[in-house]
Image (tube, rainbow, N blue to C red; front, top):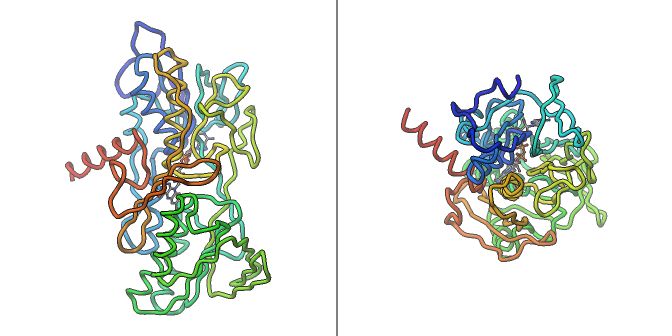
Length: 393
Ligand SMILES: Cc1cc2nc3c(=O)[nH]c(=O)nc-3n(C[C@H](O)[C@H](O)[C@H](O)COP(=O)(O)OP(=O)(O)OC[C@H]3O[C@@H](n4cnc5c(N)ncnc54)[C@H](O)[C@@H]3O)c2cc1C
């Protein structure tokens, strides 16, 4: 479908100024935050089109609760969110980019011109180990429900949660380990749980204070954490740990995947196919092309970080469109809500050079609305949609 024929939320673009046509590829946190931020910062100066293959936005972080038979991750109609941003939706995929001609070629063979392009297509998750259950949030219940039942029944007595050398998202493996331990405790069954991580300390990126508190939480839950560990799953239930010659034998192994960038044809890629951006969210040497989210070459993959990258790109695009908005460099603040099987913990840290500082942890939310993904524009938008849904049910 061409953008001309797509729904623009019932409003035509302003007639007076010629708005900058902004094409946003993606339908996740980064793309939606970018669209909502641009609508706020440059409503008159931009005309927004989102190209994405999905019709729903899934709130991925809550998928970790599904194997424990809690409520599934929330899903929102994508077009309902795009209506808030007055953005059109093209149901297709970005295939490749021709930066010199300012054209996006789509998977269905269309050509979409742009005045500015936002790439927010996420990362590709791939299993790192053959003999482990690899976390896939699209089917986490299917992958892990049986395992949790086996723990409840005492049929599985030892489990290892493994983080590969390149960390995907920081929170979910800790949450799964903590929730499994809490479930075993509730059911009064013994389960030996071990986390193996290449980090120096648990959730190190959240800084010293938060990491110390998480270490204490893990200890209290009876979880053994082996840090600075580069684990290999050498066979079913068998792990070797480098450095050293340590070997672990467990009933089951759960692992994080490794993430790879989208390697968009026409756009220069950094290592592993991620999109390189400058501190204003712009892709070097590619004209008005910007990127945000898990697709970007930044070591921390996290919804809140994706949203901040999108906010940075939005300001840069708004400035380019002549909206009189100054650009602002990326200054990441990591915010995370850790599910533990009992009380939630809220963590935050500033990040610099791959390390967290100004580390905080507490039982009370430090941002509003207090969702698992801290996003300046998407957070309130989803909270509004939740309120509407609740009012109409
Ligand atoms: C189990 C789990 C728990 C997590 N917990 C947390 C948490 O507690 N807090 C937190 O902040 N983050 C958390 N995260 C991380 C967070 O979900 C991601 O960082 C975030 O979703 C990244 O957003 P994104 O928009 O960059 O990518 P994605 O969410 O991957 O979205 C990418 C979008 O692009 C679309 N797309 C793909 N290819 C194309 C294409 N070629 N053209 C157009 N569109 C395309 C996809 O359909 C999708 O809509 C968690 C992740 C997982 C898996």
